[in-house]
Picture (cartoon, rainbow, N blue to C red):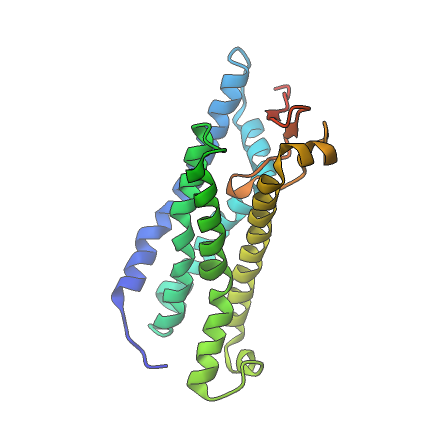
Length: 231
């Protein structure tokens, strides 16, 4: 595939590097304020807040800490100014972020039953599927057409590091997409079906992407309630 040598791809990586660590700090501050709000008189320790946050958002924290360590040098140095097309495809992953952010905002505003919330949820699932899941098979398909080989033999023509990196990212996206689809299906099933399956039990789903955390439970009326924990 002809090299385009687009400097903006590397420049964007430099710009985006700070976001990953900034987001971890913001998540920690949010967790600290939530704990403080739940127990204003309690003596909070940063170690306790961090431990609880890590248990609830382990995957996203590891993603934000480790990806810059390996992804940033891969984008700026290891690729040696090659693979602009593939890097641009990876950047498409962020197309779902505005919908994810809007989902969290609407959830905070108590608009889970609004038409806007439902529409945004459908768009989130659709964009996530195309820009975070199917984009990786698409890259391999494009390379197979460029090289004139079958798509099954394409991984054998690509460096091991590239295959490993793509498989790592692809696995994470599939995991998150499954969580999103569970949330969508749970929403359309309605509170009645949810309470029949889990009347007072904990909903053991990962807390990423705005869905229920492990410290949430479903009350008898179908409302999501936060389980109280001692500090």
